[in-house]
Structure formats: C-alpha cells, structure tokens
Amino acid sequence: MCGIVGYVGSRRAVDVLLQGLRRLEYRGYDSAGIALLTGDAIDVVKSSGKLENVEHLIDGSREKLAASTCGIGHTRWATHGKPTTQNAHPHRTGHVVLVHNGIIENYQDIRRRLVARGHKPESETDSELFGFLVLEEMDKGRSLCDAVRAGFLQIEGSCSVVVMSEKEPGMIVGVRNGSPLVAAHDPDGGMFIASDAQPLVEYTKEVIFLENGDLVAGSRTGLKISSLADGNVIARPVTRIDWSAERMDKQGWPHYMLKEIYEQPAALSETLNGILDRATGEPFVLADQKGLQTLKNATRISLVACGSSWHAALLGKYWLERWGRIAVDVELASEFRYRDPVLQEGTVIVGISQSGETADTLAVMREAKTRGIQTAAITNVRGSTISREADSVFYTCAGPEIGVAATKTFLSQLLVQLIWAGWLGKTRGALNPARTASLFDELIRLPHLLEDYMRPDGVMAQTVRSTAKALLGIKGFFFIGRGYSFPVALEGALKLKEIAYIHAEGYAAGELKHGPIAMIDGNMAVVVLAPQDSWREKTVSNLEEVKARGARIVGVGGGNDSSLKELCDFWIPLPVSTKHKIDEGLLPVVLAPVVQLLSYETALLKGTDVDKPRNLAKSVTVE
Ligand code: AGP
Image (cartoon, rainbow, N blue to C red; front, side, top):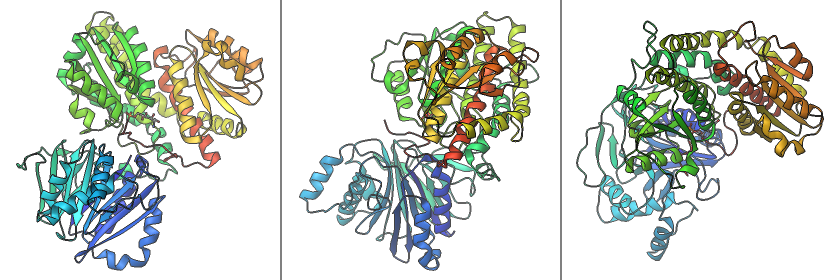
C-alpha cells in the first residue's frame, strides 16, 4: 500500500526521502514522487513506475535539491485513478503540497463542491482534493496547521495526510486518521514522519506511533502532537524499536524473499526466545500475562486472518484442537466481517496478521470489541494498529520482512500457535506436563533441524532448483496434501501465484476426485506433500490417481521413503524419516520452506519481480 516519508531538520532531505521510500518499496506501489523545499519554493518530482524513474528525473537538478532540508515523499498504490504520473503524489494545489494514504470516502461530494467554487482538480485522485481544502482555509488567514485541521474535518474515511506549504516554509503537518503514521524527533534536530517505522530506524530507534485523530506539526525545532478535534496538545509515548538498518538490507542475497526464506531458522529461534523460558520450559514468561488469562478462559477461539496468515490459522486449528482440546474456528476476515456471525460469550477472536495493519482483520477485531468479545493478536510489528487495538498481543520475532510474499512471518505465526496449543493442553489438563515438555523440546530443536536442511548448497535447495527448471513452461500446478500438509499445499499454491504468476491450486488431496482431477493432463504438475505421517498412504493413493492421468509428479516426502520416491518424476526429500522422526504435527515447519523455495526458483527463472510482485502490496490497508 502507499508509503509516506517526510523530513525537516538539518540533513539533506533528498537523501532521507529517497532512502526512506526505498525502505517502503516492499509495501508495493506503482508510482512515486518527492517534494523538496528550496528557498521558499517547493519542487515536485514524480513519475509512474518505479522509484528509479524519480531518481533519473532529479539527476539534472541534484545540486540545487541537495540544499533542501525539508520535504515529503510518497509511493502510491493506485486505488482512485490509474497509476499515472499525474495521479502520483505529492500533489500540488497552489502553494500547498501534500501526500496522502488511504481513501477519502466523500470525495465525489467534495469534488462537486470544489468545482462549483471554481477549482479545477487535475488528477483523478481523491487525494488532490484535500489540497484545495487546505488552500481555501489558508486563504481565510489560517496557519498551515489550522488549515489542515479545518480541511481534515471536512473529509470522511480512513486516511492520513502529510502537508507542506510555500507560505510556511520549513513546516510539515501530518494527520493520522486510519492509515498508520509514525513520527520521530531527529536527534540532530528536526522531525521525521513516515507510514511505518522502517524509514526511520537508521536515524533513530525512538519513534512515536500516532493514534487516530492525532495531528503532528514538525519543524527544525522538533515536533508537537495535538488533537485533530480540539487542538489540545497530546503526549504520546515513545516506543523503542529494536530493528537495525542492517537487518533491513539484502546483505548480499539477490532478493529479500530469498534472504527471508533462509532467515527462517533464526526467526523461529527469536520467536521462541520471546515466548519460552528455556530454563523452566514455561512459555509466555516474557509475554503479555493478560493475554494468557484470555486464552485460558476461552471457551472457543476464532482465528481470523487473510492470505498466508489465514493458512497459518488453518494449521493453528489442527494444533489447538489436537493438543489444546479447545474448539477453534478459522475465518477469512473479509467474509467474517460481513456475515453477522454469532459470537458467544467466552469466545476469543484472534487476529493473525504479520503487518498488523490488514484492514479486513482490523475491522473484525473492532467489531468484536463493540460486541464485548475479547480479542488477541499475533503480529510481527510492534506498534502496528492491530497490536495496539487488541486486548492482548503476542509477537512473532521474525524481524522486518520486506519481500511482499510472507515467508518467515508465516513460519513464526505457526510457532506461536504451536506453543499456545501445548500450553493450553497442559493448562486445561488435556496434555500431561511431560508431553507438553517433550513437545516444547522438539520445538526448541526445530530451528537447528531447519538450519541443517536449508543450506543454499544443500540437497533440498538443489533438488528444488532442478525441479523448477525442469517444469518451467508447464501449464499449471496443483499442490496437494492431507492433514497438516493441506494448509501447506494452499500456501505453496498462493506463493507460486503471487511471485511466479503461474496458475496454481492448493487442494486437500482427497478432494481432487470431486472435480479438479478433470484438469489433469501431461501438461500439469502436481506437488504431492506426503511426509511419513498418518495420512501418507491415502495421499499416495491420490498421487496414483493423478499419475495415471499423466501429471508430472513432484514428491516431497520422508528422507528414506524410497517407495514414494519411485512414483515421482521429481523428488525432494525432507530431513525427517522413519529413522529421524519429529511429531507429525510439526511437519509443516519443514514442508513450508520447500514450497516457498520452489516458488522462488520458478519466479527467478521467469524473471518476475520477486520482492515486489505486480498488483500486490505488503500491508493491505484497504478493504
Ligand atoms: C502473503 O504472501 C501475502 N502477501 C498475503 O496473502 C498476506 O498474507 C495477507 O495480505 C495478509 O497479510 P497480513 O498477515 O499482514 O495480515
């Protein structure tokens, strides 16, 4: 989704803005632009397409722009109006220049009124209209800050803006009312503002997450937060971010996604460290105690999520029901929120969201709260809207995930739910303490197992690479599995669609014969996830059915499963077998990296934009 960066202080603003926008590229965008104050004038440079286009445009005037220490920048993900240069931000209206995230819902009404008053909007966006409102208010003699406040009170919808004016050079005013905004003092004097903390961490670790209804005004002397509604000054807490700028760089990997796939053992260890006390084997010592009580007292859990997080929730259901012995529903947030569901007392709604900003998931949690239902969140981003609005929050510690396709956050979400399941089982008397302890022991060993398995020159990586190469040009893919492997099959198909743009379906293996098997011919590949678990024999029967119809079979199975290997055209062995066992419930943790890597290698061969796939955004803050 759209990204905002703003800066005023003593640094070279062009560098702060461009570097900041690069840090936000992962969110997905289709045009970009910056506005810089030089003297009393603001120059706007913007372009459709990638940020590099903007950089090329400013090449000729870099020297002039280098003097600027104040500006705003934006990456736009089109909602109202095509991804053209004209629709790109920043938008200029007379002396007012602005960037905007989110949606102005009453934009048609505002446009009509503005046109009737003689204004001529040039773009198709809702964003530009806000500039006219500020302009009109400043023409009445209001300061930039007061004009932004008065203008904002005329719009409806969930959005944020950051505005400058040539009439008040050196002042930046931002409002958060929906889309996230984070502000920070520059330790050298001045202020940063951005749509998330990532552009700020190389300058400061102390950030302020603005709340809805906050207005922030910044200048060389610092920043002041006040209430949008009444102008009263507000003190917001400072949050310390522990992400380093280094962790956000590619560090030699060709893509963030590949780096993040290989960071999964570390993401698991970090997440474990944040939850489990190794000495006592007790979970949650470091986590939110209120959240524990919420879970303990729950009579039913509804896991609500979208995309990969929804797949993680599907697995959560298996574990929480098997070990925790609690009834679990899994809901797609975009469906749940409009279904008028029956929510009984004792139900806990758990929003799972790596970004913590997904609009549909957030809406469900807000609705639950209005109905008096307890909410909890599993998220990777401290200070995200979902983390702040949930009654309790459990963090995955995967570190920043820049690739649009979720990988290490997905695996970390699995881990948190596994620990919930073990802990709930023990607490509710469904698992004896020794069984919980052995489950946790296995979890502690998982990162090591994965690290050995996931060497870039290891057998898994090599067989995945050669499989992807051999199947390049195939018409489509099915990913099939049963039991714990089914949600992983769904995730594998989603990954392939997202980054390689190849049609792929994830199916419960037993469902193929109820329709989709009609699609199978020699030009289809079927990835069969058949580890040596309770479902293996049944899955192998389903494999035989598609093999008989000519499909190219990619088998992913136990390291010593030679009879399965013989049935497959391509074979990817797992690091577990009948000799080296792990609990079958934990198999998704070793299966997921295989399907992630298969998608990555296929996308690489196709030459797609792996980290920023077309039409996608990292945090989906619109419905
Ligand atoms: C995952 O690869 C996708 N980019 C997408 O499906 C994502 O999982 C979904 O949008 C939910 O995002 P969230 O976890 O940030 O809520």
